[in-house]
Length: 120
Picture 1 (spheres, rainbow, N blue to C red):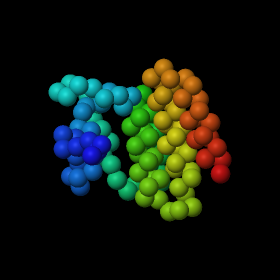
Picture 2: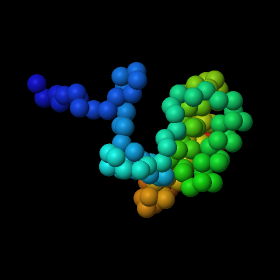
Picture 3: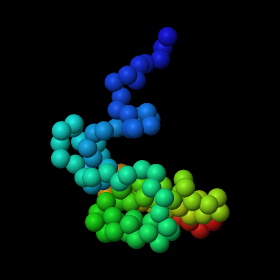
C-alpha cells in the first residue's frame, strides 16, 4: 500500500511526469490558466555555439531558469568529455535563478558548485 497514485499528474507526450502549469520568468509555477512565460522545449540537440547564444539571450532577458534548461539539453545530449562543462553552466544558471528568487544561500551554493564543474 503506501504508494500514492499519480493518475492526476501532468504527463508529456512520452508519458513522463511533467507539470503543465505555466511558469513565470524565473521558472516558478503559476496557477493553471494563468499567463506564463513560454517554456523551453526539452531534449533539443543544438550545436555548442547555438546553445551558448540561446542561453545568453535568455539570461539577458532575465530568464535564468530557462537558460538552465538549454544548458541541460547540452549536458544530457553532448559528448561525455563536455558534460561537466554543460552541467556546470546549468548549475550556474540555476544559482542565478535561486538568487533572483531571493534564495541567496541556495543561489551561492549552486554558483560555487557550477563554477567548480566548469573549472574541471
